[in-house]
Image 1 (cartoon, rainbow over the protein chains, first blue to last red):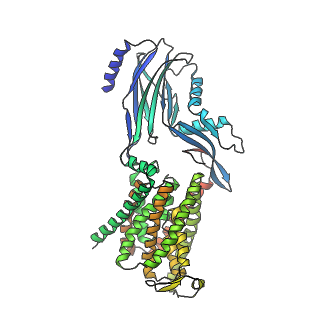
Image 2 (image 1 turned 120 degrees about the vertical axis):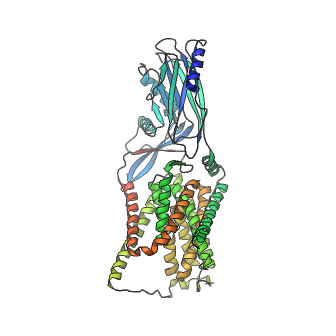
Length: 249
Length: 306
């Protein structure tokens, strides 16, 4: 119902905004990671006023940055040992890109350009292993592993376009996501992949409750957290002893 | 029901953890073992990062050993002087162990290190237990043969810093208990075990302590060492998952109480063989994981490590 109302508002507003522009909104502005968090989805919607039929809409979802290490298992004395071979510094922990027109002629090029600007440009090579891995291989491994973990998707999700003016797009977030700001970028492009108009939304993902209390104290107040953990354990040990003494009196 | 562990940073099933806690607790109730040496590798096999499994298990043992010490205090079965000397050695060992742990972790090799320690450890304990139970069963089928343990003078009695342990009725050097405590501290901090299965034989055969104070005194030391180890891991490595510890404590307490009450109904030696088999299976699984060609040679980790 809410979507429908928003859609109506957008439909009305399309009358007034200029050609080649995009406006958007998201159905929630914050996501709470509680202990029970099991993944969630976001609905992005809005209106576009394409210049002509060849205008396409790109939607990107960019998660907070983290440093990612690529490790390769190597065999030493009969056992497999992890060896760090490359590092990507401060790259989005989650990245998803979709296009309204999957037949866009420059699709491959757009994909490469985007992946380069968010991931590939941040590579630090730590070691070239014996079989001489190339930077291309690191790119491919990063892309493959991220896709495997559900942290990357390129042109796999569909953007719904209604009457060439309204769009809606569902983002599925996996259960293991990094807290922080998730940016949703909508861009209108033409056949030559030239940007015509942009719109951006952001969603705040944060830990709450027990999750927030334990993880922030563990990081920021380790002395308190350590004492707290010990005291809780001793208290529970004491309670258990008393309880069972009383039960089996 | 799925829950997300804040420090381990993995989703796990709450009931699986509770049942695991109860099952290991049950075994500890039956055999009078701590269960850390089973719980830590099982947590790792469940997908909890090794560093978190070790530190969190230390936290759980702090709870269970405290509860055990309270029972033994009532019976006056704790040699405090011996316990305190063991604690001194243990605190040093734990501090050293946590530092070693931190260094290996910074190289990104803590999983491998903990796995190797466990393979070595479970392999030898499991084999020893298996052989011992086999021979006991064979012996009991033939004739009852009671081995008497005599107090004898050995190299221990030639060491300096001799002191009197009234509750244990001993007059020995303080050096061996400090060294034994130190080793237990190392084990607790790098493997997340209480170390009772080494501490208890060491107290009886090396120190010559009377059996009546051995268990109480070992629990007394283990409680201090695991509490200290928890604190050290929390401050040095930030790997104590209190939520995971709470679940394991609850499951463990229930299981242990149940286990302690069914002991009489089971034939001890045959069950001990079962335990030995479980230990060897866990060991085998860890070893296979290291030796078999992985499906995916590549993996990713987050954050900066050297």
